[in-house]
Length: 355
Image 1: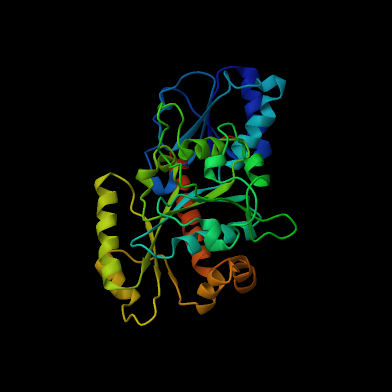
Image 2: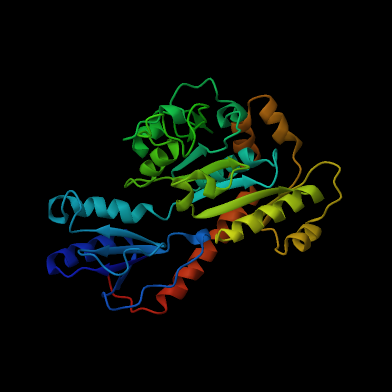
């Protein structure tokens, strides 16, 4: 992603140039007088960084991550350059919400499939149980007996490194699995305690994801929509909606997508799932939804068997070693869309050599 730089101090500007060069980012010098990029849809929430040493008219842009080098701790000349490099180098990792058009759509397993696909690409990834009606993703994945933090245990000052070593693991191979933050029935995403002083887990997870080593994060939202997740819902990069291939489910999806549009949010990426005995086709779904589904999940009897026997990790790693094809399709489409958007944004600016 590009790094828009508005730094007046020459010494800091040189430090920033070196950091951008090391991270392989694209450096774009800008000034207060220049027009910022057009706002993008929520499906591509972050399209770049703004690094500045003063308040600028660009600071409130919803698609730019603002980093102030004049207030950073430590300062650039006292180790802050390393922190800046870690921050800039991590933010390509998306925050993905998986929702269902109806109950039982299959969001929990598809969230695992997306996480496993990203994990297979050597990307740090976290699964978060954001379904208010969930039985617990740890139960579905068969790791409910593993020790570790659940959402209610997450400290307010927890870092990604803390979460990675203190939670149950999916697809754990030699201690290198996918950390899972499973639901706690007593804490919700936006709730506060009786005094109103303790934020719900949504704010705590958001804090973890703002760290310098943020992971890719996949949230199983069940039937909750991203806007219902409070602070965390406003930071989602990609919204995936799983729709079983039946007429009632498609009608429900159409209604939910209309609600999303009414709130000014970008429509979700739709993934349809085969269900036994249904004659509903992908073409019918595309017609009813007025959009083409991005991917289709075929019927897989081994999938349900893996849930019943607590062997979801085995199903993922043996049946789809490099990730489920539908998950791979969704992530590739997202990456391509963001790349096209960034290319379009950069066409309006002069790119400088970082080094």
